Image (cartoon, rainbow, N blue to C red; front, top):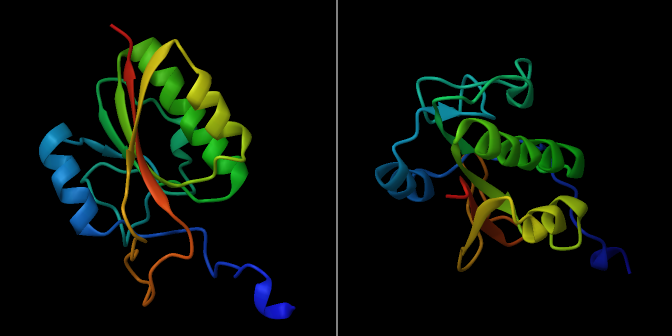
Amino acid sequence: MAGLLPRKAKTEEHGTPRSIFNPLNVEFGFTLDAAASDKNHKCPKYYTKAQDGTKQSWASETVFCNPPYNVNDLLKFTQKGVFEARKNWVTSVFLVPVKSDQEWWHLLWNDTTVCVEYRWIRGRVKYEGNDNSAGFPSVIIVIEPKI
């Protein structure tokens, strides 16, 4: 039975592969990496875990965000994306695990105050700093102001 238990991740940080980031950056022109580290940031301007990107302004930015994958951070960061789209007309793009059983997923799915687009990733992502592909599916979520 032990073989059927889910693997526990060694870290909540999953470095974004350039193969995913670069085409999105060409499309959106990111100015801020909202959840990064000094080692894995993809934009010159970024917020670390200590700075907590959910407590910083995203105004006048085009945001890329690959947040920690625990349920609380996924909720906080996606709510921040919705808030910034409504208040400051910010576009934010998230690389997140498919967690369709969690509250944050349903809040986004049912939010009619912003535009939410899901871009499904075929196969499993191989995150930077990880020798193996993820044990879960991932998705790109674009949150934009409703015009």
